[in-house]
Amino acid sequence: MHRCLRITEILHLIIGYLVDEEVTSANVTTAIRHKDVASLARTCKAFMDPALDVLWRTQSSLSPLVMCLPAHFWFLKTFWRGTVVSLVHEPSHEDWLMLKRYSRRIRAFDRTTLQLPTVSRNIVDSVFSPDLSDELFPRLHTLNVDILSKPPPNPILLLGHIRLPHLVRLRFNMPRFYRHRDPVLYLTLACVPSLQALKISASRARLDVSTRLAVNFSGVPHLRTLYLSHYLLLLPSSLRELSHLQYLCELTVTLPDDVDVDVCPSVQPTFPSLQRIAITVGFLSQCTNLLSSIASRELGSVKIFYRSPPTQNDIYELFREIEHICQCYADFNTLDIQCSNRTQLIPHLPFDLPRSMLRPFLACHRLRVLDLTSLGTLDIDDSFIAQITPAWPVIKILHLRASQRNDGCVTLEGIRGLLRGCPRLQSLHMQVDARILPEGEPEMQSLSLARLDVSGSRMEDETAVERYLKTLAPQLEWLKMKPPSPDVSM
Image (tube, rainbow, N blue to C red):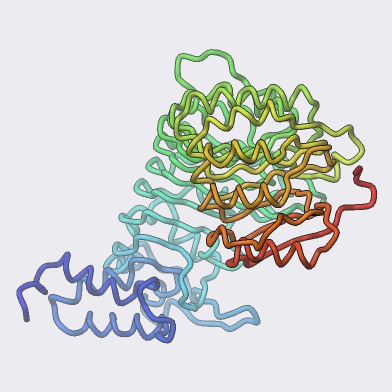
């Protein structure tokens, strides 16, 4: 055997390449690739440990591990939703520890393309008991609770007693059944002190009532990424703990309507390392207060979703704070402000976005995403487009929408100039005045634009406009040209 193959690190790379789904052709099934690695493990002693490490590295079920127990401990039963491994009788502590030869190699429990049997709930409780979980999985760094059993275990209870001191990534879905039992869910994370990424999903409740969530973030000082579903409302006490985490970079969170964001001075800086924030609030004023408290000098992305109708003053104060962010953070590149429930806004007075509010963004020369919707008018025309092109040379997504039409409007000539000056633009949503086609034959201006929405635009010859736009951007994959509603003011 070549001397290179006696180096464990090289063997890990070669064998890992066999089961890497990103580099394997589609006509080779995952099962066959894993059988090849299993064959390597039986080839010689030099190959055995590296091959076993690769085979066990990522598991999508506990069943392969449980089926390594002697056969008298378990049995297979087939149901309409799949095959389940259940226990005949509970193994002793020493019996479970016999599995350490394989379990110590597991780095992640997560979804894969392998279709494996699942396990019964009592197996999950046994394997992740306080006196077993740390011993069985000393190298586990990723845990997707949803794949452990069907139906999944209660993640609140599971995390209350496991011990996984080296876990780095954790994700789970909060089933509606458990959310209906308690008005407030209390999640403790002391069992995973090294956690860096946490994702908690949740589906819409039957009564459309969101669940309040309390989390002790002080137990995970190294947390870098947090995603909480839109249907989970974070309590103020948890938000305050979260704001003082030193390494938090990405935050997706929803706040209750009645939360008064506390921006009182503190000895500790708030959100000192935050780079991206996506926040859903009841009122825009909550978001403005939160943004004003951020101490990070690296904030690059702000996404805001609001539920209640804003006033013109709310819009003004928010945009003033966004202007301050643009001035302070040189890498600011994304701004997205949307209403999460537009049906609530219809009966209320619209608000306008005058050009004076948009002009400060022209200083953000690294802007890549700008997505704004006004329920009133949006004051942009060809002259403003002429300012956009030199200011945002790397912009990829530009969505500027309005519910009411103003007197000035971007023309097809302005769209042509925009595509010429912003060669990386991939998605554009904007109302235009397309009643007059520019003179001369159109020429291709963009090979990157894939999505274009000009719904609500004024046009007389829709076919000619469509042909003109497809000539400007021949790589268009999606074009929407819905005519304006009859009640839209002209």
